[in-house]
Image (tube, rainbow, N blue to C red):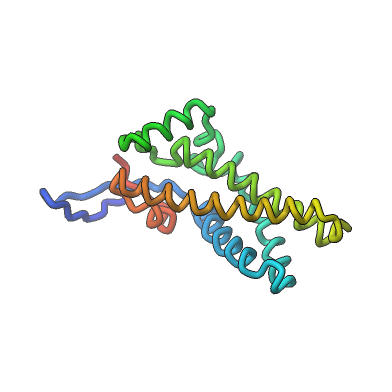
Length: 187
């Protein structure tokens, strides 16, 4: 569904047509995962029951998102945003040069970040499950992989936030708003 949103530009007043991009499941997944990851990171060894409960929530979210990546709405599907490494590298070069192509859904670099975050958080979830219910609580290597994956995910989240800020500035578009309301400028 397209919506006409009033927009006040410096040169003139005009209406901006917006298109629905992010469906409710993608938006709820995104913000719930962000909150869950934050809680999991902050509780760590300090509040283990909360950490484990949030870990189970994150496991369910990741499983749901993987399924939705194949059967979900157009821009939620992996086929819409998963690109070859050469395409991602070209997109990153264009971003660095300050003139990237605008995508209605995820850019190739954004799509690569989605996959990388999902994979990294999944490693953390699997190793967390191994320690919680798999009998690997005393296996040092499993704990090390779990913590390394969580730390890597935190670095990726920071890079993701930087990418969102850069893309928002380069395209003069509020991407966090789009992930809240589900719509982006159509042009």
